[in-house]
Amino acid sequence: MEHEVVIIGGGAAGLSAALVLTRARRSVLVVDGAEPRNKPAAHMHNYLSRDGLSPLDLLKHGRAEVEGYGGEIVNDTVHGVTKTHDGFAVELTDRVVTAKRLLFATGLVDEVPDFLRARWGRDVFSCPYCHGYEVRDQKLVVFGEEMKVALVRQWSDDVTHVPSVDGIEVDDDRLVAVISGSRRVPADALVYSAPVKPRDEFLLALGAETAETPVGSFVRTDDKGRTSVPGVYAAGNVTDPAAIVIVAAAQGAQAAGMINMDLVTAGT
Image (cartoon, rainbow, N blue to C red; front, side, top):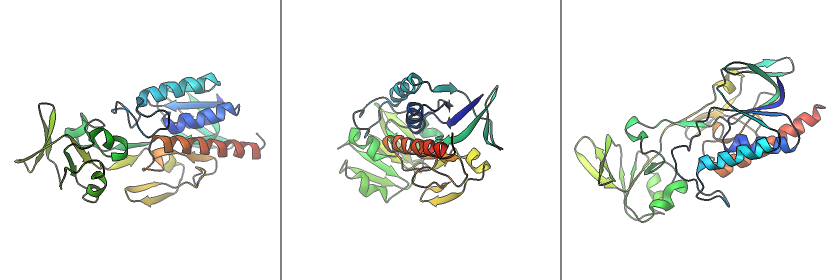
């Protein structure tokens, strides 16, 4: 089945793009693996008029809006993407769909150590803009990145930096960071900048160029979301590791506007 646009990734960036394009009366398919980066978090913040909303509720409302304008959303896994003579073919689990344009909004993966995974997004986090206010004036431990200590001190004066943490324990529901097997530092929350990996394998397979960022290599786009591959766009964390939810949503909307004009220019 052919669509004008296939969007791979149904988070804030992908759904915002789908909303713009469906309102522009484009045929849109959103393919979503249902594994948003912020799934562990109970709340999201800094999203004007939606501060404190569950990130999963944001996606639920966003899906309803897109479907209300005729967009199609499927929970599926993309197994391959190839260029065709007039667009792209996207291989799903049990069918192949085609599109004139592609938008990747696949996000990234935080490579969190196993011993932190159960508390990630709660009292272990990486972004103080997203979680810092909720632990203001409490005892915080920053480990790994020493340069982050000064930033975290905007939310609390009680900040301890440690170079590494070997494990965590819980004492009366309070975290205890275990360092070098013997030293124990109690904390109300731990701040850790986990390594990140963009979900960009299909973008790279299509030949998209990358650029170096402070946290690694990411697919390069212009300010409208265009990659180096004609007809292929990217928005959100797959291309911008620093994009918080509201920024990713804005990038998706902006890329959608460019995709629509691209199709108009092509006579579609």
